[in-house]
Structures are given as structure tokens and as C-alpha cells.
Length: 282
Ligand code: NDP
Image (cartoon, rainbow, N blue to C red; front, top):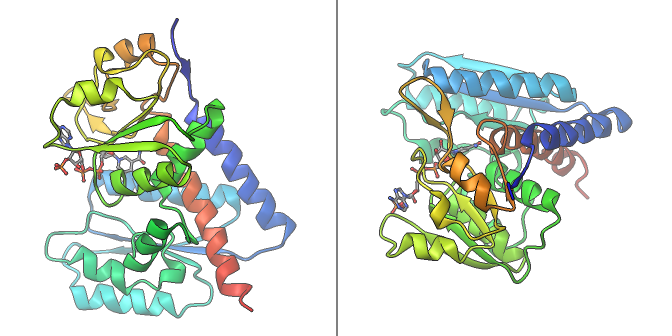
């Protein structure tokens, strides 16, 4: 039987609606600063989508579009200014930055309380020990999608393909916090297909089109496809060969319309959390 499609658009709309209603109910004045350096077209699309989501939720967005040749000093100065701006609750620096800028240095400069992407080392550390204020947006969005299926994570075999700091590793931690039995795969993993076939919950965060084929999927598994790949014909596709996987999986996310919209919805949620952290201190 074909898998049920997990509708990321619908679920993300519900999350954004909750955020909007919370802001309206509590009359919050929430602000998100979005910094973009250079004119990478994909980054521009992401930034525009984030601004649109802010508008929908009633969050003020402040865009800082800086030229490609911005110096590190100038960018760090802007981050400092935003760190001390009371109207700005969240700061998002759109990655990747142009090559001459040190991403790590810039991220570490963001006040952890405003780090709504949860990329700052102190927030990453807090995720590790399970004492977090912000969850990283993409893995948190994946967890929402898994929850929407009603499948319990506890005790399940969970396989994450990919070990990046922004997706694979935090994803594995979140699954572990929910008592999944987690295996993390990467480019040096042996017998990858065999490992994947054990998965009740399979997360693909590789960045390679059609990497996960139907024969790598356990019958009835929950398959979450994080990958965003652009094909030669201009179409977007995930890491999972959808046509094959849909015949084997129990639940599957499409690309587009799966994890992507959830990432932005979770960013909105984190921005409200940031407001609360900054304004409800004891
Ligand atoms: P990275 O390139 O940082 O990481 C890719 C991971 O895949 C690495 O750990 C790498 O292993 C592993 N990998 C690569 N080739 C293989 C292979 N042949 N076998 C097994 N593992 C392999 O990517 P990201 O984590 O940043 O992103 C992954 C994908 O998710 C991309 O398509 C990206 O566009 C997408 N993405 C989507 C988001 C969304 O909102 N939907 C948000 C963020 C990312 P190794 O470590 O050994 O090199």
C-alpha cells in the first residue's frame, strides 16, 4: 500500500497560526532581524520566505541586505548593534556567507538569547544535554512531522543519514531525547543500505538527489526527506527517490512541501520564545 504523505505545508501553517494567535493574545511586540550578505539567489528566496512568514505571524522583520564585499568587521559591528537593540528578539544571519567571512566567528558573536537558529555553541551544547531554550529549526520541524504521524519515537530504530552540525547531529540528539535507538550514517558508513533497512524512522539529510532508493526502506517506515536538490531541469527534489519510497514507506514527506516549510515555522516559534526569554526574566 502506498505511504501516507506527510503534508508539511499544512502542518507548518498550523504552527504559524499558533504563533500568530499567541502573539495576538498576549499582545507581544516581537522582532526578527534577518541579515543577508551578497546576492546568492537561493539565500534570497529563503530570506523572502522568512519575511513572508513573519508578516503572517505578526512578527516585525528587519532586513539587512549587505553587499558581497562587506568586511567581517562591518558584519560583526551590525551583529553587536542588533544584540543591543531591544526591538530585535531574534537574529538570523543567512548562511552560507561569502568565502572571506568567517561564519563561525559571526555566529558566535550573536547573543545566545537571540540565536533563533540555535547555531551558537552554547545553544548547541544545551541541545546536547537536553536543556535547551531553542531547538534547531530543521530538526525540530522534522520532529513535528514525525509526531504528526502518531508514530512513537521511543524504542524505535532511527537512522539519520548525514552528520552536519545544523541537521544530522542535532536531529540525532532530538531522536535520542525521545528515546529512539539512533544510528547516524555518513560518507564512511559501510553497508549503508542495510543500516537504512533497519530503520522504523529514516531521516535523509545528505544533499544528493534520489540517494535513498526504495530497497533501502523498511516496509511501513516513517521517511523524512530533508534534502533540497536542484535537478538539471530546474526542478527541486529531495534525497529520497520518492516514486520508489512511497511504495514501501508508511509515511513520507514530499519535496517540496515537507521539511522546508517546517523549518521556517519553527523559526517563528523560536522568535517568540526569544521574546519570552528576554522579557520574562526573573
Ligand atoms: P552537509 O553537506 O553539511 O552534510 C551532508 C551529510 O551527508 C554529511 O554528513 C556527509 O557525510 C553525508 N553524506 C554525503 N554523501 C554521503 C554518502 N554517499 N553516503 C552517506 N552519507 C553521505 O549538508 P546539510 O546537513 O547542511 O544538508 C543536507 C541536505 O539538507 C541538503 O540537501 C540541504 O540543502 C538540505 N537542507 C534542508 C533544509 C530544509 O529546511 N529542508 C535545511 C538545511 C539543509 P560526511 O560527514 O562523511 O561528509
